[in-house]
Length: 290
Image 1 (spheres, helix red, strand yellow):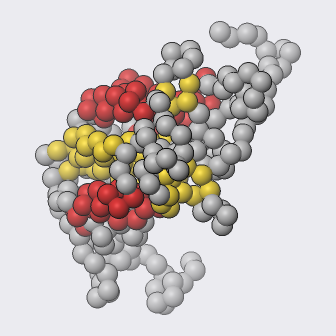
Image 2 (cartoon, one colour):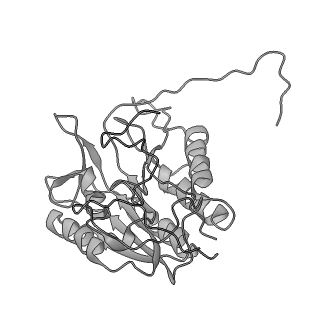
């Protein structure tokens, strides 16, 4: 076995020795539990940061914003979240809302959700940004305040971020998959545990509406009436939230966006393009809302 830098074999999992520089936080679940503890007094906050209008020198109005908020609110309320919606915040207020949320007491909460609905893109240094009412901010501002040393009452609890915003101006024409000619057509309670340490960036999930560098579409066709990603996300959470774990549900969201949607903008470069959500996760356990 490869030796750790301290000369150990890395097998003690940090149970016994504590560094003075390492912050402490309450333990919500045992180290080897496969599921997050979703039995606190409250489910937690779903913070929606919604943008419809921007300053005169900003991006265009998001006409789908009200519908997006309505469907996302309904989905997370069904999962027993307390939904907090802020509209068209200026940059300073946007950052203040996130900071205040990180300073709130989440001791009795299962988890946290943040949903961002805005325009976005990449700068000349290839850094992703999102638009507030009056300025751009780096996308990382959404989650930077929720690491355990900054928000200890959410330590060891899932923190989920869903971003409806473009990530560039690239397009995805997709590829047609053809059937082989020979193929037929087929229509508790928790035990008392010893202390343990976790990485600062554990227990987070970030899901973007689209792949790196590409558009995130909205649509008024085929039963959609707003942002494509948020439509499927809300549908799946509403339909499966009491049956499946989060990873299984987000796999379905990714599949349905990728397979069921194709842009329709005749005569434009944006016509007949595909979209696929993009997920980064450091979740260590399954999330069940039931």
